[in-house]
Structure formats: structure tokens, C-alpha cells
Image 1 (cartoon, rainbow, N blue to C red):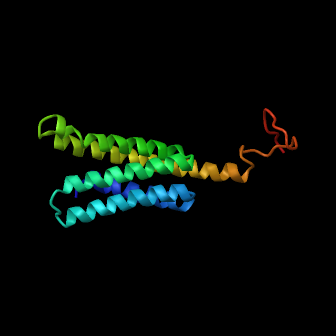
Image 2: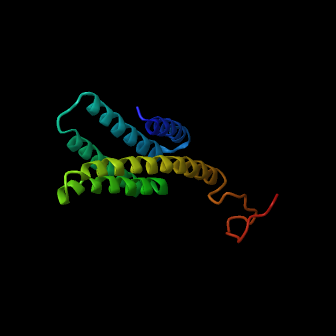
Image 3: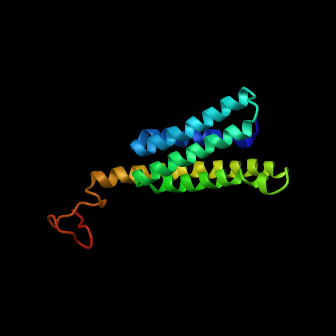
Length: 158
């Protein structure tokens, strides 16, 4: 296994564990969809399935639509970014249809780059979920207001 893969898998495991721990239902659903596609891709590679790239492309398209649906419902920016990066991965599969056969390796390289961006999105998701919980706990604005029910320009220090 390439050292890049080991580092990325370690970072992904850390980030995915944190988002499962700190996230809400939409964060967990996006994380589980991501894990399911990575696991299914790994199983397909181990079984040496003929037409592997086609099946991986189908899984990536399904992941994109799942993330898109979750982004529509979840109000989480990290899932919107994740769906956008996944769209880049899906579009990259069209490259061999428009040019030479050697662009298949370009697709693999793009998928590695998207994987790195997905990992960064997961860590941003941990941050976003943590602050969403904090803001919900502290009455949606992160500070205690002493102005009754009306809004003020700044929170007071108490």
C-alpha cells in the first residue's frame, strides 16, 4: 500500500469517527454513505470484478446523488462542498470518452485529489457540527442575551 493511502486512511478514520461522535443525523448519514462507497469499492477491487471502473463510477454517481439529497435537507455546508467535490469525481469519468485512452489515469489522479478534499470536508464537518450543537445549546447565537425576547446588536457579558 502506498504511504499516501495509509495517511489518507488514517486521517479519514479519525475524521469519520469524530463526525459520527459529534454530528447530527445528516452528518452521520453523509458519513455512512461515504464509508459505504469506500467499502464497496474496496470489496470490488479485492474480488477483481470485471469492468471495475464502471462499477466504481456507478457507486460514485450514487454517492453524489445521496450527498446532494442530504445537502438539500441538512443545511450543512460541509456536505454541500462534499457533494461538489463528488460531482468533480463523477465528471472526471467522462474524460476517456472525449480523448485518448491514457486519460484513464487522469481519472484516477482526480479521484485521489477528490479523496483528499473529501477528507478536509469531513474535518470541516466536525467543526460545523460542533458549533451547530453549541449554538443550539446557547439559544442559536452563541451568547446569552439579557434583552428578553427581542434581538440586540451584541450580547452582554454576565
